[in-house]
Structures are given as structure tokens and as C-alpha cells.
Length: 147
Image 1: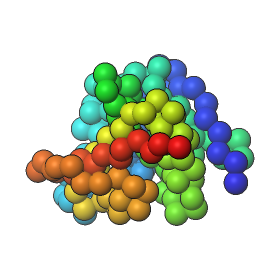
Image 2: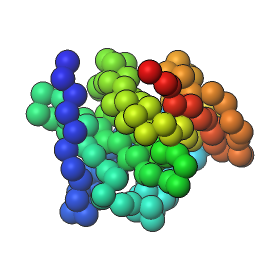
Image 3: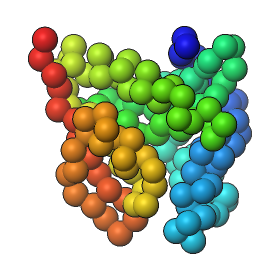
Image 4: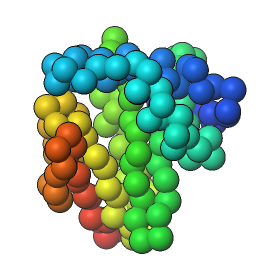
């Protein structure tokens, strides 16, 4: 399976929000925190198209990823795959791409996962380790690999 990336632009905001809500609906519903308006507001407040890429498979936009550079690290701010495409190794391929960049730069990567979400196990399987947590989220870090 070939995973490709496509730049996102401000006019894609509605599509990005739709993907985010679809990907997070089950986890947020389990926690009693599903609110599409809040999900849109939270995403929109930090939306920066310069760091946002659609994830495409077979010419279809099936998710998106946002990696923001910070002074001494990369922050994996969002990684969402449409529910019908989850569990097929697409997220792993996206992480491989991000890891390659981070390792070249010698930078750690941080990510935050919603408490109770299956994404926690996904990130741990791929080398992220627990850092700390808040009421709703668990924070992870992956240190750069040297070659």
C-alpha cells in the first residue's frame, strides 16, 4: 500500500474537521465528551495549514497529520485516519515518515492521546513512552534513533 501526502490549505478546514470528528467520535463518546462543535473549535484554534498534510491512499484522502516544529522537538499534534481505514498499517507508515525526519534532525517527537483511546496502545507499540498525563490526556515522547 502506498501512502502519499498532500498539502492542506485554509479552504480544507471543513474536510479536516469532518475527518477529525469521524476518527475521534467513538473514543469521545465512550468518555461522554463527544461534542462536534467543541471538536471543531479546538482544531480550528490551532489550525496551521503549513504543518498539515492529508494522508492519501489510492488517490483518496483518508486522513491527515499535523507535525509542528518546536525549538527542540517535533510535536505530532494530530494524526487521524478515517475509521474504515484504521487497522491497515496506514498510521504506521505515516509514523515511519515522521520518525525518519525526526531521526535525521536528532529531535524527539511528542504526542498526546486521549485517555481511554485506542491510540494510546498504537503510540506505545510504535516506540512512544509515557511522559505524564492530565485529566483527559496522556502525553508521550519518542527519542530520536541514531543510525
